[in-house]
Image (cartoon, rainbow, N blue to C red; front, side, top):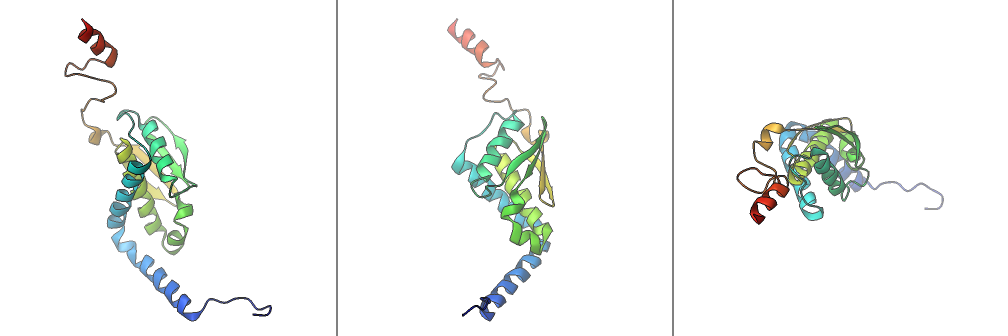
Length: 168
């Protein structure tokens, strides 16, 4: 190879072309991809972290993003409010997929974050577009269940009040 540029062998080119076609064909299966990615997001949280208080969306988002960083080191919270977060950086790990088909990359990013948030204790409605993944707390999925951190008994007393009542 004296001074010549190394070229990709034809077999490798064919393999790459085939993979690109496969990724492009996944567009019609975005929902299934999001569900598969959601399962992986849940697994990352289960392996790396715990759960937040079910009423603390921000804490759950921090746990979710920190867990996702095991697979996506560039992932970060870009914006946060009480019931909404914006995560950026997942697109870096999904670059190959995103360059072939942005909708497939967005479906995967949506699933990863939705699963990670659910496992961290905050079910959310998640959407992604061009690398920005927005998650909004899904109050309906929380239901009326009391937080195990905030209450300790059927009376709904907070922790301190329950301890005092028990001591009496």
